[in-house]
Amino acid sequence: MADRSNHDWLSTRRDSLLAWWLPIGAMLLAVPLADGPKTAIWVAALAWMGIACLRNAHRCGPVHCR
Image 1 (tube, rainbow, N blue to C red):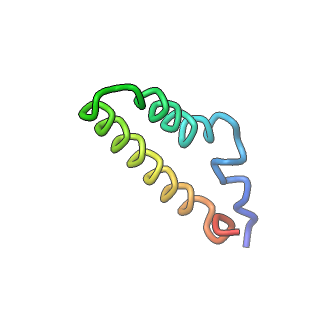
Image 2 (image 1 turned 135 degrees about the vertical axis):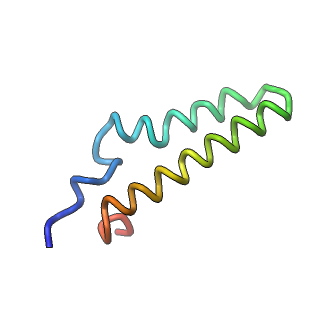
Image 3 (image 1 turned 30 degrees about the vertical axis):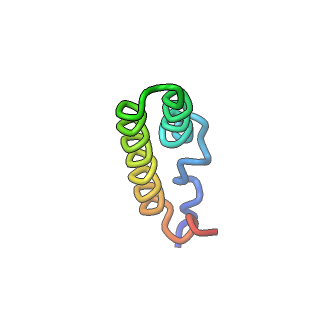
């Protein structure tokens, strides 16, 4: 079986930034906002990260869980 660890989005800075750090930054910037906009940003950011996690797990295969 081929080594799929190089497919992990955490192995490249750009992919890690887009998949996880950008939504985390948006969530942090949303903290002082009113509840409505903050909730919308948090829901969108968490959905973005969840989808990125699932896609990354699919790309990495068993390597993702180690």
